[in-house]
Amino acid sequence: MVVVGGEPASMRRVHQVIDLAGRLGAGVTGAFLRPMFPLSDYGAGGAWMSQGLLQEAVEAHALVVDRTEARAQRAFLAAAELQHLAADWIVLDTVQQLVERARLSDLVVVPPGPLPEGGEVTISAGQLGLACGGPLLVIPDHLGEMSIGRRVLACWNGSRESARAWRDAWPFILAADHVAVAAVRSRPDFDDDAALRFRLSRWDREVEVLSEPAPGDLASDVLRRKARGWGSDLLVMGLYGRPRISETVLGGVSHEFLADPPCPLLISH
Image 1: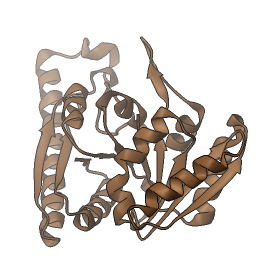
Image 2: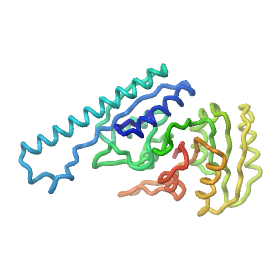
Image 3: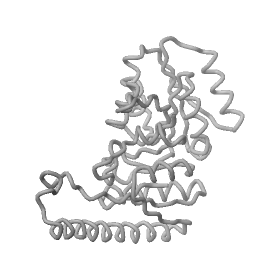
């Protein structure tokens, strides 16, 4: 499921996802999250407006949203048809509906940061990743038309989150042209590196293990350098975080990479 909006970057993501789905033999669902009427943009929550003026504003907003959704749907379905890809379209009215549909999806594709179509009630990629129980493909807006999933770099530190991301990424690993593992730990673990190579060799996959010891506060810098140096077009990583009553707290590496991804991310909690 790919979250589709009216902005140009959204359609670039659509084309990248359709190309990826074609290589993986998958179908794709476009999901349009309708922005709510921005009542807070009107002073005192619109209390100063007459009922008639407020109704006109609500109807004008709905008309703009309807037109945006119709354009996005046409462009999405046309792109899928051009690649002979099975596709369907859904419209979601609330963030909660988005979370519920994400839980039914094999993979959810979103931009980094807050989703632009959420209106006053927003949800970020990190929050959705913690809530949906499955993998997210996070595609930055600045990458242009680059292909995704041909050079897959999987982050590994032996944690539960990295193991979950590894398993969720398996279809991408098997379909990739090149695979590497970035093993960044506080100290080297040569037995673990050998086990990683052995597992992939059973599937006839040659893999580079890019192992480097680094303290936790330097892990994000090391991973970013390895992703760029190796030329990764998909970085697989565990999503670390926990919800609190009033906020979602992400781990340091997760927070930094979602704020400024060096390449597309496949994240899983």
